[in-house]
Length: 140
Image (tube, rainbow, N blue to C red):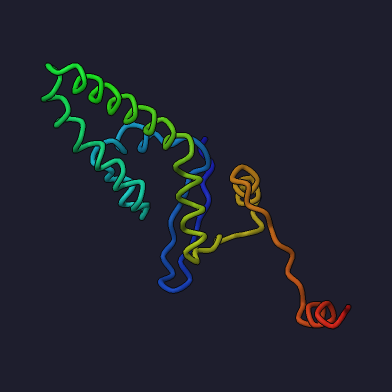
């Protein structure tokens, strides 16, 4: 069973679920013009995969030339390697991107959230009270 974590946008109150671990969608469809990456708001990854999707058929026309054939093979291998990389790390990249944009965990104390934070290397920062920070500032 897949473990999912809910993230919420504090301004719009929109809630999205992010799976922890492998992404079949990114494995099979990220090379399709980067569509799932754009839907996840991962624009830089989407643009890169879109560029590969456009370059691959263009380079396939040059396969009669040894250099064109080599470049075509390189783009195919890069496309496959990046699809596998995104399948492994795409959900983590998505969650970290959304968290950096202000999204928050719906239930930060849930076991699934704690597991996701551990897997993604997200450290909980202790909340300090204003009196503690004021005391630290006045110490030499």
